[in-house]
Length: 391
Ligand SMILES: Cc1ncc(COP(=O)(O)O)c(C=O)c1O
Image (cartoon, rainbow, N blue to C red):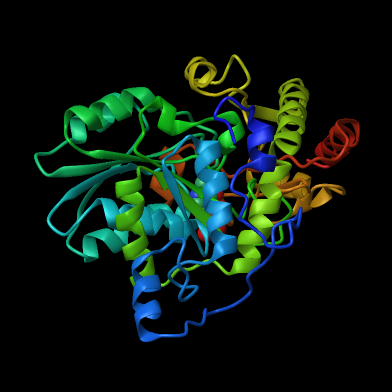
């Protein structure tokens, strides 16, 4: 293993567990518990996680291999796998901030993360400020004496807004606070927040990392000290990933670069196609020069993701008609996999938000979010073209 290897060589060869049979594919330790012979051995293994394994809620060799591969791809000292993306988000946040402290997050983030900051943390005695935008100046204005966490999601959900990662990380650093960045939309192939100054990066592995719509999982990566604390939080809250899901996520990482490269390219083509379409009011894609975050995205991302959203001219009714007329793209929540998925945030993922908050965040009635899959670009362009004739 060498740190000079390219991304895909690391993705293929990183985080391999030692296997007595020299199996090329990593084994799945589908077990809840591990036996020991003496009380002394049990006590010792309990102290040494990893490599000692006692109980899968504490640690598991298959899960550990996924964590090591992920740490390598994010350029982090260590990583911790979790049962879902929200388990990664909540574990990271609850490790970073305690009762009586203050955390800052923007409203334009994944709905359950918004609810965590808007409802759950305050009910635990943690003060929060929800920002109306993602400007670093807004984070700065919200800082308080007891601020311990600045939370970022970039690109964000569902408008692909871009936060200036180094600017927010610098702010946090000068205030003795931590930064957590949800980089799910970007993937470690397109963006490495830790190299940009962030303390902890979180992912829903359900999305691009797994990449095939067949697992639920999450992962956080950061310093060894943070991950050690986070492991304790996770062990107590119990959001452990199943070893088979960890194995699927690890297998997904092997082809991440190939899938994401194609998804990046097709998303750019689709965005350009939609910009030119008469039934489309606006396209949100950071790869377009017209996108307000384009310049920052160019600085901090290697490419612009396979996610985009667009507004169908005329609002709710035409938007829903176009959505329902798609033949290849599937109407489903979630993102980041091999199949193109579309969703209608106003009716689905943003109903938790009061209408005024939703509209202020730019989530209009005709907005359609697209997660571009790995299908042939020509077929997707034709599908969106035919669907928009129904709008
Ligand atoms: C940006 C982002 N973060 C976190 C999550 C939560 O992931 P999960 O559904 O795996 O809990 C999602 C889910 O869509 C997401 O889009």
